[in-house]
Image: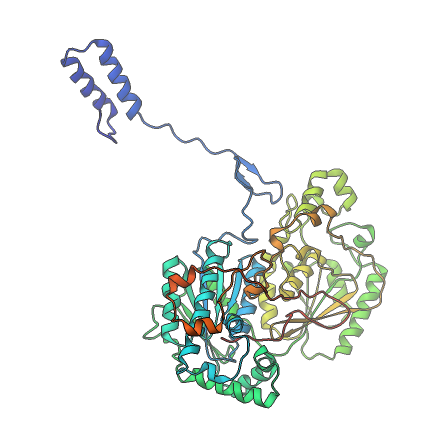
Length: 575
């Protein structure tokens, strides 16, 4: 009976109550009308500050209600940006898959859920037996239909990953050499509210292209039963098929409104256009730091310390007698490697500096390489922590990656702290990093593409050097013991945490076939079926879902005494 939204509730109440009085209503009705208006239009009480409670695992302040403590869709910061589709562009053998896998490994390591969707793998599923380069000819209409269906099927999985599975970035790894194909991806992203960022790899150096073909392409499943010369000839003709229709990105005119980076001649030059947000600038920064020059990275812990002998964590103790022997053995090992311009990095704690001093080489101290901060548990043994802080002891065993020591750090914090070290390692050539168990685990997890769940349990024993050699799509690791006895500081995962499934076990930096999903979706129904049908529209293709029967698998690597390749495969897919 009063105007909705009226702010002058007192005047409204008086006016309507007086109207009632003039119609002969009683004083009681007058009062009731006045009271009703007051109840409807009275000023709302000021909102009280929300009660907060501290999450026991991560020591983060949260609203005091029944909502879950923290979403587990990401082990990094929850980005305010909308999901992003990274679109690779370039001719075959230009390093697109190398960039895709390396970038995805980095983003997953910093906590941004990312997955590669390689159209070449979809094509191999549709076309079981590759015959020749004729499949890639622009005038092969039936093959063009199949290739388009493969791209649409990959985009369907991209949509599912970003919309339903908690992914934040999807890498659409294909040649995408025509404007028509790129516009299709842009329209798909607009329809689903995704941002798009293009990465074009341009390489005009014939030596680099030839090296890439010989090292990676000839071992592709397409050429499993071919000799090297025939495979090389066929692949060069395949490149020529793409060249005839290749339309490079044009940031000055046609593509001026697109967000993109052009990587020219393996990092010799970069061209960046319209970076939209933080995550895209982070991607640009990373791509401008990586290189493909041969190099070796050595990771080791300091020599055994007095705190190791006493079973205490943290602190700033010196080396034990066996730790000093290791430092001498490390000097001999480094001399035997005969490395030119070796960089040596240490933390700012005494035990790593004492180890480096024995090398008689220049070294650089990094504060970010210091051991994980155990807060109130510094310089305590695990038995003392269990007795003094029993709840903290149990919480850390439940989720070692996310758990933050009171007034200290978690492994999640440590990853963020070590990001500058990773960037500089990518820029350098031969480096020896002398650090600590937790920091070494974080660095090793980056190079071996280990999940957040696996990271805190990687074995990094004292008096052992891990020799890392980057290869095409991964890192070869050799574990070298210098034969100096030391205490074992490794703590295995508790039986309780082994029983239950952990959502962080999954690693997303591989092609979608490798993800251990209970049910799989068939990307395409087969070459023959698609060759007989016309190319379906984008929206209709994205809605097709059929179970898959035989997903591929990717093997995880484990560190051992022998030389291993963490990539799991030497194949470079191309669409």
